[in-house]
Length: 315
Image 1 (cartoon, rainbow, N blue to C red):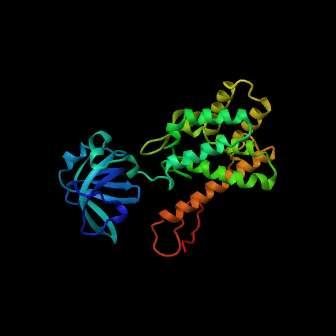
Image 2: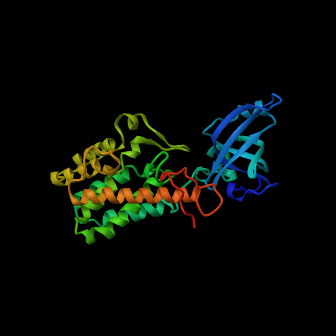
Image 3: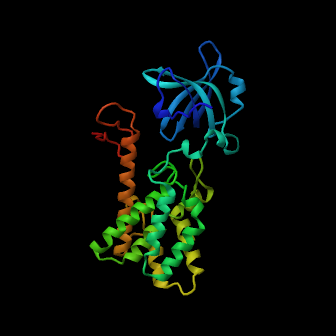
C-alpha cells in the first residue's frame, strides 16, 4: 500500500490513498441522467468534496454516510478548490485495515495533547488534593470512566467538539483553577472538585463515536442533571462523605452554566461562581480558536458564519 496522504497535503494531479470519514453521501444525477455519488470526506487535517463517477452501483453498496472508508483517487481542482475523484473505496475497519495503518484517530479531529498525557496531569492534580474524601471520590469516578474520558468530546457541535475534547476542557479548567484559587482566596479543593465534576454528565448525555450525537437520556434529562446524579451516586458509596461538601459540589454542578441560562441554579458562593466563569472562558476561547482555524476564507478576516457571528481577525 502506498503512503497515506492527509487532506491538508493534497495537491492537484496527485494520486492519493488514505482513510477518511464520510460526512455526507448523496446519490445524484448528471445532466445526462447518469448516476454519481457526491461526498464530503474528513480526516484529522480537514475536509474535502469528492465524486464517484464510475462503478457507482458497486461502490454505493460498500459504505454509507458516517462510515470510515479507505479510498484511492485523483486530486482535481473544481471552482478553484481541490476535489477528490475516487477510483476505489471501501468501508474501513480496524480488523481489516489496521495492518495498512488505519487508526480511528486519523479521521476525526483530536485534542492537541495526547490523551494519556492529559490523564496523567489530571490524576496528579487529583492526588494533590488535601481533602481525603474528595480525592477518593474523584479517583473512583475518573478511574471508572477512564476509557470514555480518554476519547470523549465535550460537545456535539460546540466547544471542544473533537476526540478527547472533554479531557482537554477539564484539564484546561483545572490549570486555571489552580492559578485563580489563591488569587481570589477560595477553597482550592472545592474549586478543583467542582471543575472536575461539572461536565461528567456528558459521558452519558453524548454518544462518542466517529460522529458525536446526543443520547436519549441526554435529550430527556440533560448533561447537568445526569452529572449531578453520577456525582451523588458515587458520593453515597464513600463512607462518611461529608454532607456539606456534597451539597457544595452538587450546587456547583447545578449552577455551572448560569450565563447561558442552561442551569437550574445560580452560583451562590465564590467557588461556584468561579467554576461557572472558568467554564465560560475556556469554552469561548476554544470556540474562537476553532473559528479561526477552520475558516475557509482567504485573507486576514473570517466570514460571519461562526459562534460569535462577526468577522474575526486571523492576523
